[in-house]
Image (cartoon, rainbow, N blue to C red; front, side, top):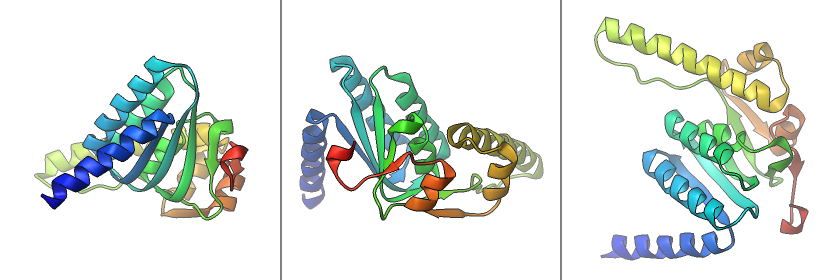
Length: 188
């Protein structure tokens, strides 16, 4: 019963956030979160062309769910602002980079992580070879996306994502991930 109360309470918060044209992405990025986000974005975009505010605090997760959210942010006609808070890592950073550069904002103590996709390959050798090819193609796509969004060269991004690349909000600003660091809503 306690779990059901928590879900109802969380849904109540989500409904109230939607009235402010705001969506929160927190926790692990997965298919359920991508599906929920897609529904919310489509509803908000159908209601008006007023800005939508996406707050992100996530350690990342499934890269394909991240791409689904990334593509939806680019798909809608309403301007979308992303605001980084806490941790914006891995697939969450992919989502963050979907917004136009001038609409990518972060709080002073937010932290960003970009890196190559993680793999949990298993199976027979021939299947693992196929998975390795797919992972390499995915890495190139992610590096290109980061380069396009930040103005860095693909070679520089590839070097930076070879290992975990942790960035403070100031470093993310210098890197081109953020356009501004904000402390008040009025600064949006």
